[in-house]
Picture 1 (spheres, rainbow, N blue to C red):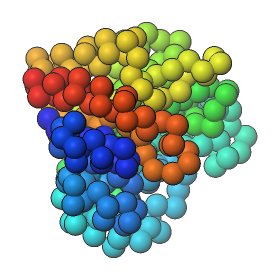
Picture 2 (tube, rainbow, N blue to C red):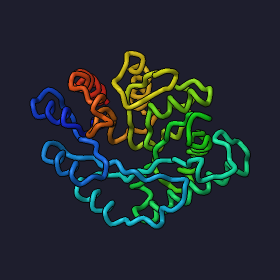
Picture 3 (tube, helix red, strand yellow):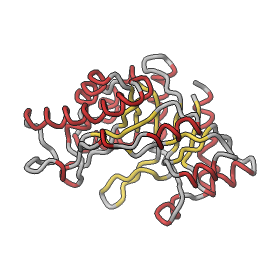
Picture 4 (tube, rainbow, N blue to C red):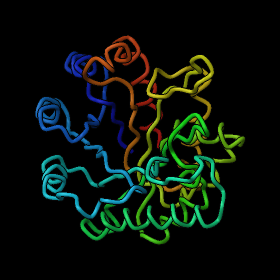
Amino acid sequence: MYLAINYSTQAAALLHEGRIQIDRFKCPPWPDMIAEASPLCPVAVHFELKAGNAGLRETNWAPLHAFLEETGTPFINLHLNPTIKHYPGFSVDTTQPNQVERVIQQMIEDVNAVVDEFGAPRVIVENVPYRGLQGKVLRPAVEPQVILQVLNATGCGLLLDISHARIAAHHLGMDEKVYLAQLPTDRLRELHFTGLHNLNGRLQDHLEILETDWPCLDWVLERIRTGEWNKPWMLAFEYGGVGEKFAAHSDPQVIAEQVPLLYRRVRDI
């Protein structure tokens, strides 16, 4: 299993200095960033497609094909991300069967738009964070049985974001390991992981890893190691980035300390 980290100038400098070892830089589909990162390390492109809100069949697929070919990224991803503004009259926490079914069918339709273009073996769907009435994502998107239904209907794989799953489990009132165990991990293709901090009562990911975060990652990796879960091609540490938004969250000391800890874990599998 490979290890990736979000591309940042800090991570790039540490890699150049030989202070960290990674297999890929994770980049959004931004040509300038990919051009900057590629000479240093192979790139894995993480796309911004969202399923559940309609309109994906109108996508211009040519640039996405080009990114995949240029970087050798094996999968095209999309997020199961139906939002409340596209479902007037719904509640974010809806469990009404007719509303749940409408959300499911729209997610399936959107995922199939990508499957029809790229083929099911190359498509992976990512679980998103559900925050209950505090958020915009509809509850059906994170229900494990719904995610399984979408995968079964489309034939695609799972991109498991561990931190997103922990946030969803919290707002569903579930133990995080119970929630994770109910996901279709036999279809696991890629993993994402970050620290999860409680900031004024709100769980926030994309931050440095805390001591309280490692046990969940180790629990996941043990299930992969034993073959209980499918082995993904890559674990991405989604820490750091480029621009003002990420300036405070690209600490080179954090990267230098935590990437080797992740790399050793990944190499053991």
